[in-house]
Image (cartoon, rainbow, N blue to C red):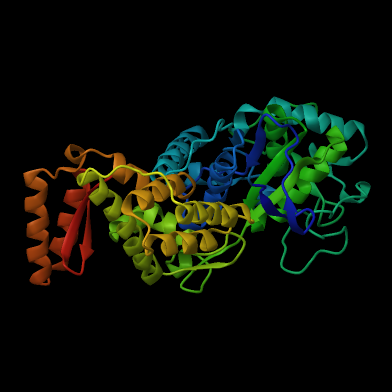
Length: 468
């Protein structure tokens, strides 16, 4: 079965044809490590995991590189002062940029485990590849695509006749809704920074032919992608907000410095809203995985919820929808746990089971249509297919879904035994809730969490689950 996927470059669904038969090479834009990643970030990062799992289900080997941006991602309002997000957070917290980057990198990787992402093959850090960036910038300078202002090197987009190929943003014709770097030294708004001259006292800076400074955001991904995947590879992924200027500028730099266009397929995920609104600190609606767990949800409930909408659509997150996803996922995990406890093993598939198996894979291979795949799953789950076959299908499909179905089946009973002291705390919390002492109930929830368990309220009382 062939994968068909929407290519932002061609602006249509295309049949995937790998550049090399032995391995599919993938680059995805990772986090800027100056804060905890939120659920909007994780919806985007989930796209990379879903693509890798789908390719493997279709028989491909994969090599996935996801970068860590720990320098150079500029805030527009701070650009003229040369600050970036990591540096700004370090100053606010009274720590070094390296301490901030290390802390949030570790937090990101832990959260990826909680989301059940398959680990990327490499997580290169921008700060460790500055020499590679300087080398590419030198080539771009040599070929006449740049100009300099006081040690800062800018890319002149009018020198690139193919600029705008990806996003439709042509020089001098910026599409409404897109923003670019605000910098009075530039010739035109669309020009962008390749190398920024360091301001006095800056900690994160490097030597270059143009003086001390640091790389612009867009050159980082080019250098790391090319180093580990080569100048031509299969997939480049990210959120829809990265199409312009980030990915458009990546392509421009690669053409100018390397004579290559980087990826053949550019794939982007849609935005996530919360209760119909954009996430914002001022609105108090920026949620992390910890926030979800504090409300009694597993990160895998959120993972399942994301699959109820197509990856390219704008997705409206609500806690009511998350509760529905939790119940749906619990039905599936409870089923396989019952099969395990009854000693039922996965069975061979009947013609009806084989048809369901093919339909599921067909939906996934059709531009990663997970809502369609879930429809196939529930149709099979509610059918008269024998339980052993249902178990076989669910375990196989979870290799794509990754929502914890297989883990629930393979986990031994002894792994989920609840210590008596945790049960006692849970009962105490239930009593506090009956007495409407919600402060005490929340305190007991935290104590239970510290002991490695999550308490989930249900219509019949509560459920205790071991944290992953």
